[in-house]
Image 1 (cartoon, rainbow, N blue to C red):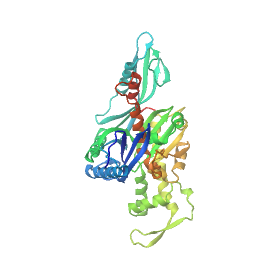
Image 2: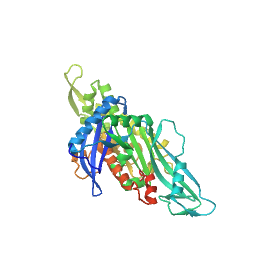
Image 3: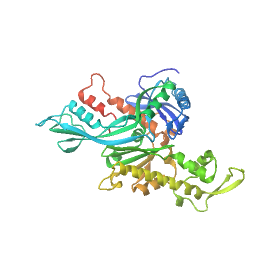
Image 4: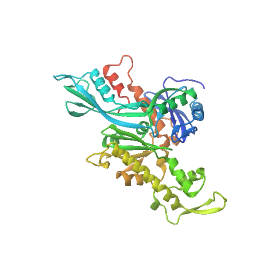
Length: 411
């Protein structure tokens, strides 16, 4: 490779189906695409790394492709963390400032943060993000930055996103074996949200559902802040396996049928529509009604959205007793599984809110092929890393900048 850039940002997304490396540099304060590499994932099981050797080999292959594409040396990266081990919880912490009203200093805010995050958690749980919801001064909610205000009590509502420590370590070890140093870990659903959601949606209340291969990650925003993060154990592979089982065909053939003819709504498929396929055992031509494919896919799609709705209820994503009233901005589906026709209809019928497909924003110089739901996580991680680095305090930054660095992931 010809060079190494100090302003380079590289992200690594190890998904259940694809392993992607995406590189960009910062040009006049904005991100500019430099290159990417993608290869089929290996050493994965149920969305987690099960074999370090094959997984690291896939990471190395994707990185080499990214290096050739960008004509750069890549030796460090930001990694994405997602999957069924993701857990989120809301907590509150605070303390009395004294008997008399006084000014709030940065040390007071740090104390509130420490008390809000001081929760018991299993030994293997690692905190990925501290996501500020709101500060409360003397029972007055809705405060974003209390520095310099006055009061007698300061409280903080915080959302804490956690992951399995062993899963995080496996991802870091995998990257290290592929020759990459990990500088940061980002919750993948936060990355996807960064690339696909509007400010209005986050303010009104929105559920971002990233449908991956083996699981689907979700994050909910309300009044501009994260209020719920979780993962549900259904992804695109489950749709494919259902087809393979019912139609008694190889998984690869079932995946092709799903992508070409699948629909999550039976009634959206004409009754007389059919295709000719080769019989899996004999090779003889056979007629397959397209509605039969949809009849397999629709129950799985409804099950996925049922899990999502239950997750929202368990996460207390409610307003006036109703989940849907808390989602004024609707539901945004992204990830490769979001491309299945009919998924938006199922989401709307199950959640009773409007739904749309989330496409990632386009970076400068980025090929059009990357404006695809499957790249939402990687592109969003780039945007996230760029934003947090921009507000990360330098040595001579003031106290306000240092305070903001506590909540680098906040919206």
